[in-house]
Image 1 (cartoon, rainbow, N blue to C red):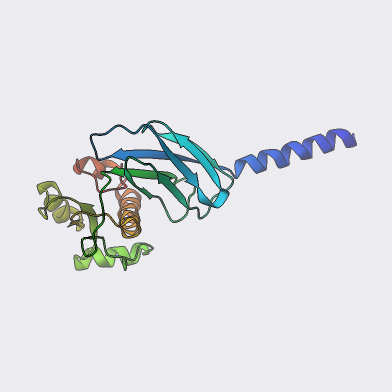
Image 2 (cartoon, rainbow, N blue to C red):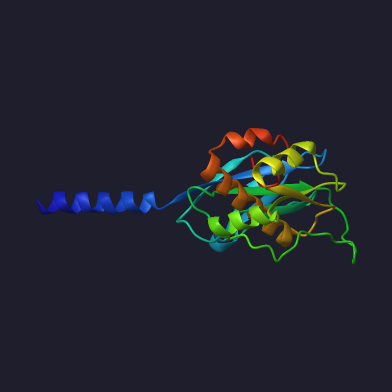
Length: 206
């Protein structure tokens, strides 16, 4: 009897342990015409390195939800890695953006604002919508706003800010968190139908 209880307890603890694991997905956004042939993805907290030979999505298993740091390096690209502040079962996508490998010159760095608040409550978000100060963020070669976003702001009160030549990974990560926060709020309030109204998605939003 004791053996049966012991076996049951062990199985229970094992199932609980596996239940706490988080499966995350790594996706690539290749903004160049070059093919990725080699690179290395690292889960910094766990000191785990994964060799990559092509820009295809893959999954990783993390021991539990929480804060993690990831990086991706390649000799052929400038690579920037963006992900949620905390990884959990709902927010579990890590995006690797591949850009042309260029020399960064002093004074030539453009970035999204780092003082963005990306942990607003629903009430604070509603207040900013009322004030007309809540915006998705996107990068592009010009500052023009697509017509769909003009119409979107008229309907939902959320606009679009465009930044040029973004090459600062830390500020870009902050902008991605901003977009994800708005995305989650809209899904909670309207379901997912609103997504069809934006054919061009802000970075970090699929």
